[in-house]
Length: 304
Image 1 (cartoon, rainbow, N blue to C red):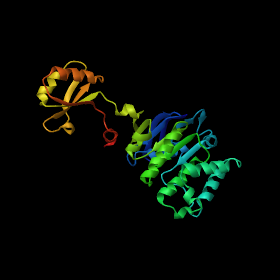
Image 2: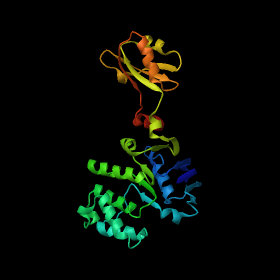
Image 3: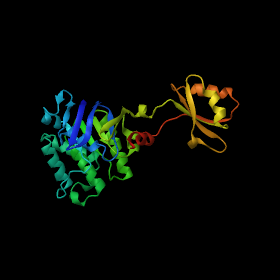
Image 4: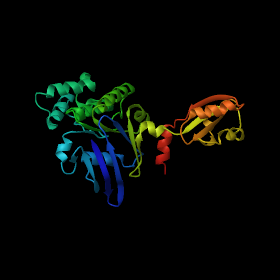
């Protein structure tokens, strides 16, 4: 549904987004990650038409965004990090206004507003001025305005910012539900949020894409962690033949007389590690497939 080709955006001599390309499919929730200043917000503003690219192309289905911007934006719902609200309006007035400017048919307006009030849990404050609301409530009102015209493409920048734990859980469930049918891009600094709700992840650093993968594949590797009662010079000889690449100490797994090691392999075959240990006289406390945390992957890909 969404395809980006060689997208670049410059601000005078500074390159904020550097020749990036990626695609996002319907029914897949894609997380957009990166440290502050990496180019995430600029990328989202390019995708929504808020900024024009210095070069490159954006396609939504068969439409080139720069050639048919109105056609695309009619199908687009965008929630920026700073929620655009009118503090003097009541929630009811704001949702009516958003339905009008988004072209919701008059006969459909009541049902669309009722649905937004329900899914964003706004009924208790429906006739309250927006200026009186907490930050979390304002975020939910802005999300309702983003979704009121039932967009096919949804781009959310920090959608759970300022929400309490119960509200975060509710909004994440809503995003999962929307992601089953929509083309959805989510930007967040909360890595656990990516783990919980995203299928794919794009990591940007210094304007460049440094990872573009499914969350599952990003975690995967060909290593097995073990805890054994032996020194490294006793463990290494067990893992010299194929499919083993080597063994290194893994201090995080040390535990009460047992030492931790990471066995690296050409392909993931934990049964081979088990077989090698079974032939030895070593005491084994633990053997498990090693899964790298998203935090460690993010740090490795984005540190200077």
